[in-house]
Image (cartoon, rainbow, N blue to C red; front, top):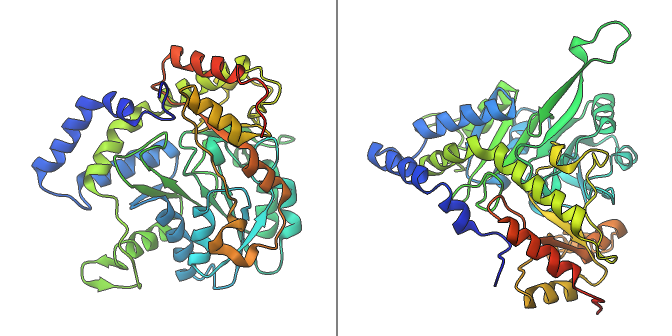
Length: 394
């Protein structure tokens, strides 16, 4: 293997001394759960995202589960309520909904972004619709003015699955600062602060990755934050006093310390990812390969903040043969994702549903190596091999 899909050892090595210091700090303190590191990270990450609250939890799936569960405890959701969600997503987004006995309503993606098509949402709204879960897939912000309009028109909850897009930015209007005849002042907000609440994953391979499972919820809703924090701690906000039938989902001190080391470099790491994506888009010339289309395509990728390129996803009509060719030439790739949620055995009741755009995406996508620790030479080698793939056919 000449080029790994993601060289986690190299990523970790780039923080080596700071990570040793952080982990030793926790060990020497002798406090491993709900301590100073978690409290400090929650404050730092909330400030970075731009929300009042951050609650550290065990993983990204739990973050989404807990948001929905807390809304049920608060009476804003009830069993059977519908949550609109993209059909083209990692299954965790949907698992969080069904885990809470809510009903996912799947919506096809926009072919140019792979994110939920905002113009297909309104037709799916019924009297049981209570929320929209947007997924910032592959690192690209999924928020859109049409989604803002719909959530305001129907008074819907907006929940973000921000597992893949830490650091991405959405440009919108702050209507509270508008003057006569104006729509408002242009502002930039990070994903994770755009809706009522957001779930984040710090799985090791993410742009901001821990050294194990870790996650968080961000929200401006103090009441929601309080309920989530309690549910995640056995339903308790006071030791041995349980207000909810809770679960155990806590960010531990070591992972919090690790994330505190990595967070200050996240924007720089994301910028390196954009630079590599820019190079790929400018230099991959094979006619059968479809490159990702950034939703701010009129801008240079390297200066567009709406995408952090957690993944660089191409499409090819003979994806499996292309992947085999790349592997034979020393380039490791992955598929995100080979089977759509509605075709998984776990949701066999959906097998008769038809989502042709989603199916085509899942049949053709292939993720090329991309990370902040790739060298220019490695990036150039990926391009050389991809461009040399010839007539790859089944």
